[in-house]
Length: 341
Image 1 (cartoon, rainbow, N blue to C red):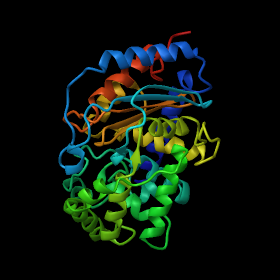
Image 2 (cartoon, rainbow, N blue to C red):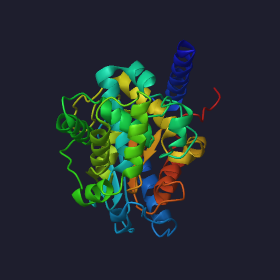
Image 3 (cartoon, rainbow, N blue to C red):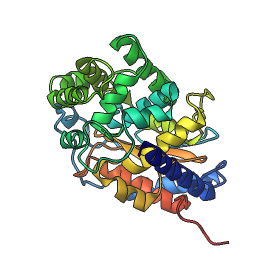
């Protein structure tokens, strides 16, 4: 059964890679003026949109300025295009799951993540305990809370401090600058993360927790509180688009194989309950966070990110989805849109 599942995941990854090769692989050939025009139009079209509201189950997030709105696109050759507020900081939240997963793949291999966490979408809420119970801790996915806590527990390091240092370093490397924690957000989350602690202990009961459950939950809580802006997120996305090499700093962060597996999970589970809807309309692997950030990757071409805190019912930034969707359409970079020869 495991061999069959492995073949299935490999086939999905290969299919996604082939489809991307039709429009998304290779250096960006669109003129800079077209990129700037698409960003300008998207920004102006949606800047006054008032839909959605800030997350409030984490108390600190409710007080974040809902008017923050920044858009950044970074190409694989390091060109940076910006619109709006690209300096205001928000907590990265669930977007961090992508880069911790990539670090685990880099350290232990793609098979370890498939076997020890699972990579199929759970089909349930991001913090579902039922999903853990039904699968007895298997197929919990690195991009929802149970799998993300397990991923944090898998990071190499002798203790929680070493593991957290490694997580901070990989996030900073992807962003191309030293990142830091938003301590008020961390304190707010740490004081109210009993559900995540329960998930970690349930995983431990099923043998799917690989470090102390309390400390692993705390590591996960800290990683979600890393502070980023729209430019940071776009460079992180562009590093994935560039096969694991930061296009701004030119530093190799992870291998192309790690990126391939990471993007596959993003494509199927990146936007909470609306992951399928997102992929259906945009074709790009992406990841959102309840802090208001959303990044998307056009492999071989660019990374794009938007920060706008008001969220829809699924927990995804309303403006970010609309802006990125608009840019994808205008630049004709949906990898599933193949023109006949």
